[in-house]
Amino acid sequence: CLSLYRAIQENYEIKTLMTMCREDGLKSRSHGLSPEILTAQAKSLDLDLILCSATWDDYESIFKTQMSKFEREHYEVGIFGDIDLEPHKTWVLDALAHTEMIAHHPIWQESRRSLIEEFIDLGFEAIIVTVNTDLIDTSFLGRTFNHELISELESVGVDACGENGEFHTVVTNGPIFKQPLNLIISDTIKKDQYLMLNLELASN
Image (cartoon, rainbow, N blue to C red; front, side, top):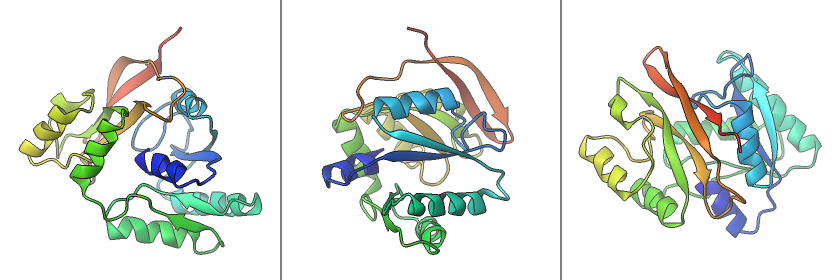
Protein backbone atom coordinates (compact mmCIF):
# COMPACT_ATOMS: atom_id res chain seq x y z
CA CYS A 1 0.00 0.00 0.00
CA LEU A 2 2.92 2.33 0.71
CA SER A 3 4.32 1.46 -2.72
CA LEU A 4 0.95 2.40 -4.24
CA TYR A 5 0.99 5.68 -2.31
CA ARG A 6 4.55 6.44 -3.45
CA ALA A 7 3.70 5.65 -7.08
CA ILE A 8 0.74 8.03 -6.94
CA GLN A 9 3.04 10.73 -5.53
CA GLU A 10 5.40 10.03 -8.44
CA ASN A 11 2.49 10.80 -10.81
CA TYR A 12 1.97 7.26 -12.10
CA GLU A 13 -1.57 6.89 -13.40
CA ILE A 14 -2.71 3.87 -11.41
CA LYS A 15 -5.71 2.03 -12.85
CA THR A 16 -6.01 -1.45 -11.40
CA LEU A 17 -5.24 -3.56 -8.36
CA MET A 18 -4.50 -7.25 -8.88
CA THR A 19 -4.83 -9.91 -6.18
CA MET A 20 -4.10 -13.62 -6.35
CA CYS A 21 -6.75 -15.82 -4.74
CA ARG A 22 -7.10 -19.48 -3.83
CA GLU A 23 -8.22 -21.82 -6.58
CA ASP A 24 -11.82 -21.68 -5.29
CA GLY A 25 -11.77 -17.88 -5.49
CA LEU A 26 -13.24 -17.52 -1.99
CA LYS A 27 -10.19 -16.04 -0.25
CA SER A 28 -7.00 -14.25 -1.24
CA ARG A 29 -3.76 -16.19 -1.02
CA SER A 30 -1.86 -15.83 2.29
CA HIS A 31 -4.01 -12.99 3.67
CA GLY A 32 -7.30 -14.92 3.57
CA LEU A 33 -9.44 -11.93 2.56
CA SER A 34 -12.81 -12.35 0.87
CA PRO A 35 -13.56 -10.88 -2.59
CA GLU A 36 -16.12 -8.61 -0.90
CA ILE A 37 -13.44 -7.04 1.30
CA LEU A 38 -10.97 -6.73 -1.59
CA THR A 39 -13.67 -5.11 -3.74
CA ALA A 40 -14.54 -2.63 -0.99
CA GLN A 41 -10.87 -1.79 -0.57
CA ALA A 42 -10.44 -1.17 -4.31
CA LYS A 43 -13.62 0.95 -4.38
CA SER A 44 -12.33 3.11 -1.55
CA LEU A 45 -9.07 3.56 -3.46
CA ASP A 46 -11.07 4.37 -6.62
CA LEU A 47 -9.33 1.60 -8.56
CA ASP A 48 -10.46 -1.36 -10.63
CA LEU A 49 -9.79 -4.83 -9.25
CA ILE A 50 -8.65 -8.02 -10.97
CA LEU A 51 -8.90 -11.28 -9.00
CA CYS A 52 -7.00 -14.31 -10.30
CA SER A 53 -7.67 -17.77 -8.85
CA ALA A 54 -4.82 -20.26 -8.71
CA THR A 55 -3.36 -23.22 -6.88
CA TRP A 56 0.21 -22.85 -5.66
CA ASP A 57 1.23 -25.14 -8.55
CA ASP A 58 -0.21 -22.91 -11.31
CA TYR A 59 0.20 -19.59 -9.45
CA GLU A 60 3.13 -18.43 -11.59
CA SER A 61 1.60 -19.39 -14.93
CA ILE A 62 -1.70 -17.65 -14.12
CA PHE A 63 0.16 -14.58 -12.90
CA LYS A 64 2.13 -14.46 -16.16
CA THR A 65 -1.04 -14.90 -18.21
CA GLN A 66 -2.58 -11.90 -16.46
CA MET A 67 0.56 -9.85 -17.15
CA SER A 68 0.13 -10.64 -20.85
CA LYS A 69 -3.49 -9.49 -20.66
CA PHE A 70 -2.42 -6.24 -19.04
CA GLU A 71 0.12 -5.68 -21.80
CA ARG A 72 -2.53 -6.23 -24.49
CA GLU A 73 -4.68 -3.65 -22.67
CA HIS A 74 -1.75 -1.18 -22.90
CA TYR A 75 -0.65 -1.24 -19.29
CA GLU A 76 3.01 -0.25 -19.13
CA VAL A 77 4.14 -0.62 -15.50
CA GLY A 78 3.52 -2.96 -12.58
CA ILE A 79 3.94 -1.50 -9.08
CA PHE A 80 5.27 -3.93 -6.46
CA GLY A 81 5.91 -3.67 -2.73
CA ASP A 82 9.06 -5.74 -2.27
CA ILE A 83 11.56 -4.16 0.12
CA ASP A 84 14.85 -6.02 0.06
CA LEU A 85 14.45 -9.74 -0.61
CA GLU A 86 16.26 -10.37 -3.89
CA PRO A 87 14.45 -13.68 -4.68
CA HIS A 88 11.09 -11.86 -4.51
CA LYS A 89 12.22 -9.11 -6.86
CA THR A 90 13.78 -11.68 -9.20
CA TRP A 91 10.47 -13.58 -9.29
CA VAL A 92 8.63 -10.41 -10.29
CA LEU A 93 11.15 -9.57 -13.00
CA ASP A 94 10.92 -13.12 -14.37
CA ALA A 95 7.12 -12.93 -14.32
CA LEU A 96 7.23 -9.82 -16.51
CA ALA A 97 10.12 -10.90 -18.74
CA HIS A 98 7.82 -12.18 -21.50
CA THR A 99 6.19 -8.74 -21.77
CA GLU A 100 7.36 -5.18 -22.44
CA MET A 101 5.98 -4.08 -19.06
CA ILE A 102 8.30 -2.52 -16.50
CA ALA A 103 8.42 -3.51 -12.82
CA HIS A 104 8.63 -0.54 -10.46
CA HIS A 105 9.54 -1.04 -6.78
CA PRO A 106 9.00 2.33 -5.04
CA ILE A 107 10.26 1.23 -1.60
CA TRP A 108 13.12 -1.04 -2.71
CA GLN A 109 16.20 -1.13 -0.45
CA GLU A 110 14.83 1.28 2.12
CA SER A 111 14.98 0.63 5.86
CA ARG A 112 12.19 -1.67 6.98
CA ARG A 113 11.78 0.22 10.24
CA SER A 114 11.61 3.61 8.53
CA LEU A 115 9.06 2.33 6.01
CA ILE A 116 6.61 1.02 8.60
CA GLU A 117 7.03 4.23 10.63
CA GLU A 118 6.34 6.30 7.50
CA PHE A 119 3.27 4.16 6.82
CA ILE A 120 1.87 4.92 10.27
CA ASP A 121 2.87 8.59 10.30
CA LEU A 122 1.11 9.14 6.96
CA GLY A 123 -2.12 8.00 8.60
CA PHE A 124 -2.49 4.52 7.14
CA GLU A 125 -4.26 1.97 9.32
CA ALA A 126 -3.69 -1.79 9.15
CA ILE A 127 -4.40 -4.85 11.25
CA ILE A 128 -2.62 -8.20 11.43
CA VAL A 129 -4.93 -10.76 9.81
CA THR A 130 -2.66 -13.83 9.56
CA VAL A 131 0.14 -15.09 11.78
CA ASN A 132 2.60 -17.90 11.23
CA THR A 133 2.44 -19.60 14.62
CA ASP A 134 5.91 -21.08 14.09
CA LEU A 135 7.37 -17.56 14.02
CA ILE A 136 5.11 -15.26 16.06
CA ASP A 137 2.83 -15.50 19.08
CA THR A 138 -0.89 -15.70 18.33
CA SER A 139 -1.53 -12.73 20.65
CA PHE A 140 -0.44 -10.45 17.78
CA LEU A 141 -3.35 -11.59 15.60
CA GLY A 142 -5.87 -8.75 15.19
CA ARG A 143 -3.51 -6.07 16.49
CA THR A 144 -3.65 -2.62 14.89
CA PHE A 145 -0.38 -1.14 13.68
CA ASN A 146 1.06 1.72 15.70
CA HIS A 147 4.48 2.67 17.04
CA GLU A 148 3.92 0.62 20.20
CA LEU A 149 3.26 -2.50 18.13
CA ILE A 150 6.47 -1.94 16.15
CA SER A 151 8.47 -1.90 19.39
CA GLU A 152 6.68 -4.99 20.71
CA LEU A 153 7.35 -6.95 17.53
CA GLU A 154 11.02 -6.04 17.44
CA SER A 155 11.44 -6.79 21.16
CA VAL A 156 10.58 -10.45 20.46
CA GLY A 157 12.73 -10.65 17.32
CA VAL A 158 9.91 -10.24 14.79
CA ASP A 159 10.43 -8.01 11.75
CA ALA A 160 7.96 -5.11 11.99
CA CYS A 161 7.18 -5.42 8.25
CA GLY A 162 6.63 -9.18 8.45
CA GLU A 163 9.15 -9.66 5.65
CA ASN A 164 10.27 -13.03 7.02
CA GLY A 165 6.79 -14.48 6.70
CA GLU A 166 5.75 -13.87 10.30
CA PHE A 167 2.41 -12.23 9.52
CA HIS A 168 0.18 -10.57 6.91
CA THR A 169 -1.97 -7.46 7.22
CA VAL A 170 -4.95 -5.73 5.67
CA VAL A 171 -4.94 -1.95 5.20
CA THR A 172 -8.27 -0.44 6.19
CA ASN A 173 -7.72 3.31 5.87
CA GLY A 174 -5.26 5.99 4.87
CA PRO A 175 -4.65 9.17 2.90
CA ILE A 176 -5.52 7.54 -0.43
CA PHE A 177 -8.75 5.94 0.84
CA LYS A 178 -12.06 7.70 0.18
CA GLN A 179 -13.56 6.00 3.26
CA PRO A 180 -12.32 3.46 5.80
CA LEU A 181 -13.18 -0.22 5.67
CA ASN A 182 -15.32 -1.27 8.62
CA LEU A 183 -14.42 -4.90 9.27
CA ILE A 184 -15.67 -7.30 11.92
CA ILE A 185 -14.18 -10.61 13.06
CA SER A 186 -16.55 -13.54 12.67
CA ASP A 187 -14.09 -16.21 13.85
CA THR A 188 -10.56 -17.50 13.33
CA ILE A 189 -9.32 -20.20 10.95
CA LYS A 190 -6.36 -22.55 11.52
CA LYS A 191 -4.59 -23.93 8.46
CA ASP A 192 -1.33 -25.80 9.02
CA GLN A 193 0.85 -23.40 11.05
CA TYR A 194 -1.20 -20.33 10.08
CA LEU A 195 -3.94 -18.72 12.14
CA MET A 196 -6.18 -16.30 10.23
CA LEU A 197 -8.95 -13.90 11.12
CA ASN A 198 -12.16 -14.58 9.24
CA LEU A 199 -13.23 -11.01 8.48
CA GLU A 200 -16.49 -9.64 7.12
CA LEU A 201 -17.61 -6.20 6.03
CA ALA A 202 -19.80 -4.60 8.66
CA SER A 203 -23.26 -3.72 7.38
CA ASN A 204 -23.95 0.02 7.30
